[in-house]
Length: 141
Image (cartoon, rainbow, N blue to C red; front, side, top):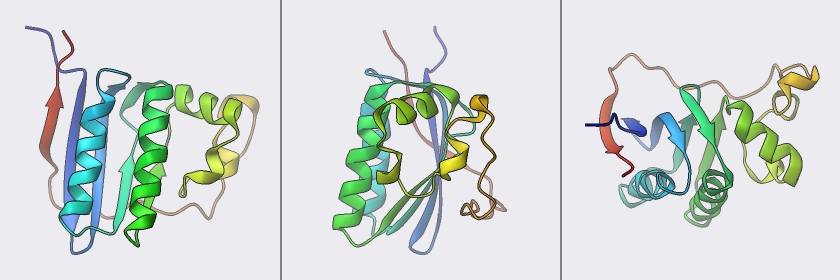
């Protein structure tokens, strides 16, 4: 049995959630990301931090999912913050010029391979003192 392509962890603290994505975000796994982010909104969460540190790949399907989720979160009176995008997402953001639509991404962090320096005032991830629990896991067939 193949390993899950994407695993999603969620940790809530009042009206704020930390979503940690691990694996690959592409056309097949983007619906899992969308479902997790929509779940936060339906549960009353209004600040969603998305930690992308363990993401190994993200294509334009993932970018589209994040843009849609950011818009839906704003419409609900909240904020979606992306943290530590993988090089593949950083490259797509650089090419499309739409990084400004996704709060939480320090502009200097988008092209680390091009010698940019990370922005020191980027929002910090919330405390992870409570262990994360897997809420969704997807397998591509």
